[in-house]
Length: 189
Image (cartoon, rainbow, N blue to C red; front, side, top):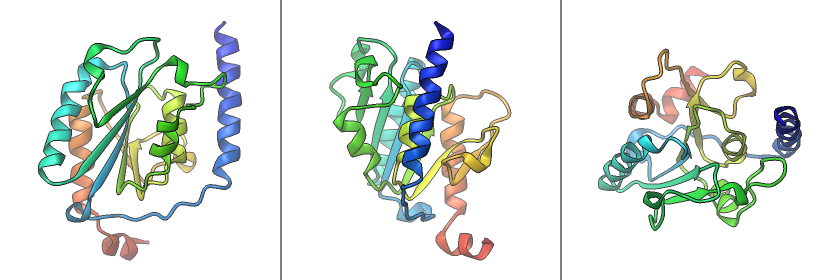
């Protein structure tokens, strides 16, 4: 059974690589003061992270920054606390096709929204979320470092030496984005 699942994911990855060949995205490195929208891709099976995301949303809302969260909960039914929240869309098993690619209209809208920053909180590297992050047209994509940085969809990668959770991860991302601006990045290139 596990072998069959891995074959399906490998096929899905191959289909994703085909789409990535045609993806055109304008990268930008906004300074912290120019951020107006943030998209978050999140492994919603980590239910303990939800209060931290809610607090992050509130903090950004106070700074007039719009936050949209797209989560993936690998089950048929969502927990009650994930329903009826404007800034959260959660995908379930029925929203994923045979090759583990997301197939809902909400995903297409999220992928095609030009967020100033996309934050990938997918510590378990779930393929439906990798698919979304890879195809996103966000100006700046952030996520965890991986074994093959050349093939990473991220412009800014954070390396957490120990599993400290998403609160530290979000703080690190905001810290480094605060250090970036288009001018400093162009100078470094």
